[in-house]
Amino acid sequence: MVYKTDYHMHSSFSDGRSAPEDYIVPAVAAGLSEIGFSEHLTLFKDPEDWNMNPVNLIPYINCIESLRDKSKKIKIKTGLEVDFFIGKEEEIGNYLSPLPLDYVIGSVHYLGEKTVDVGPEFYEGKSIDRLYESYLDSVSAAAASGLFDIIGHCDLIRIFGYRPVSDQEPYYRKLAKTMKAHNVAFEVNTNGRNRPLADFYPDRKFLHIFREENVPVCVNSDAHMPSRVGQYFDEAYELLRYVGFTEMAVFDKRVRRLVPF
Ligand SMILES: [Zn+2]
Ligand SMILES: [Zn+2]
View 1 (cartoon, rainbow, N blue to C red):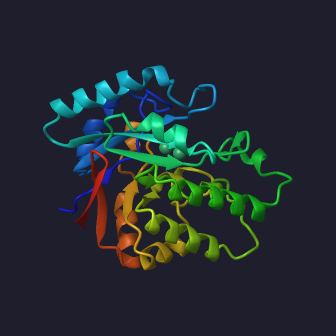
View 2 (cartoon, rainbow, N blue to C red):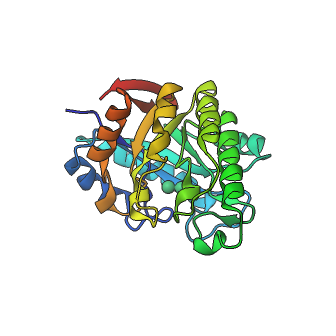
């Protein structure tokens, strides 16, 4: 049996629809060996309805740890999906370092004051080429920060299907090299299939770059409801095999190991 993990899931502690325990039965049914929760944590901004209020951080960690201790059929890990902001590396690091986490996903949602997934209106009247460039630059900075174990949806800027004119390959190459140099994994995020883009992140035509640069990989659903745990994983694993990947990154107490699949 292929050792499958899903480290990117949101429960009602942030913007997911259900309590953490509701994700376990669907995860076992999907044939997963491990799952991990990764609630949104956005420092330096007022809490909104999509991210976890930091006052709930310790109750969240306690909740996942008690599920982990009770769970017999599947391993349960504690993670966070943390927003990256250039120039705030030290504060983010100081905030995260005492927390008993298995991994941290670093994601870029904000470009300026707005998030790139807020709606198609974010893109209207702007240079798509420039947006891609600044998004991928920001993700490269997140990878170089040393703060994260996994980079979330590394080209979320594709979400509404706006495409740049210029060749993006050099940006993806730089990003992959940065990830490798700073020892951070990327994810194939299957939730893009549920968005207007209707495909995974990252762009499958650049996946070979991550393989060539030998960047560790995870497959994650970014599920916001139990029915989407492990969604489209067979296809994602097949795609990775096709590109030449043979191992997955597995995390425990922020230590990574690779398991064959
Ligand atoms: Zn995200
Ligand atoms: Zn997420």
